[in-house]
Length: 271
Image (cartoon, rainbow, N blue to C red; front, side, top):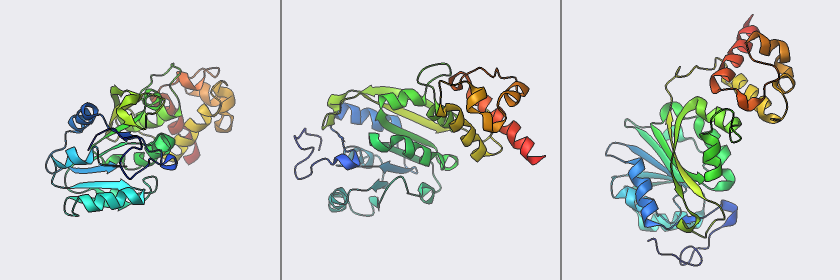
């Protein structure tokens, strides 16, 4: 299953438009499946199963698996290889898929080797289902994972950090070198675990849409001071009222600070 091939796999050439880099390292495959730790009763969803590098070992531990795949050739390969009672194939774009429809009685776990070209928008899409998910494990470009788990005040800390840390506890598990894939990418990858926070953990935004707008505005021009980037929200006066130095920059505020600012604005709007 995992033999290295010059074209990714006999009869299938990796497609750049789908960002296909197929995982071929048995040791990395084993580490990912061990991290997911699938158990009987779990509802497990794999995004982008590709040639089945993770699908096969997952099905060794599960009676049934769901996969979301966009490539019609790969879908046909999967259909020929696995009966529907073992593998449910959801054909289509993961960016548009309603993952909430898959929630059953047991824990919902989502995993995948995510294409670099859609990783951030897909993470934002999946955040909509955080309340229904038990945990998620993804392999992403290391640079993206570093941004996800970054601390305030660091260069990697940004909009992605705030929006995901608001919803999840996250941990970078291990780095995956380029040679673990075929074709070989030019960058390192990393596996990250995301566990949804319970409502209220670390503060809850009263108006999630307003919270997202505020964070996007703050990091829209990250070199500028918050008194300038947040002018439409009240600027200097609003920041001082909430005890935040107006000359601060977006990366210096913790997630809780953004929640507090958004809730203060939501309270004003209700008056």
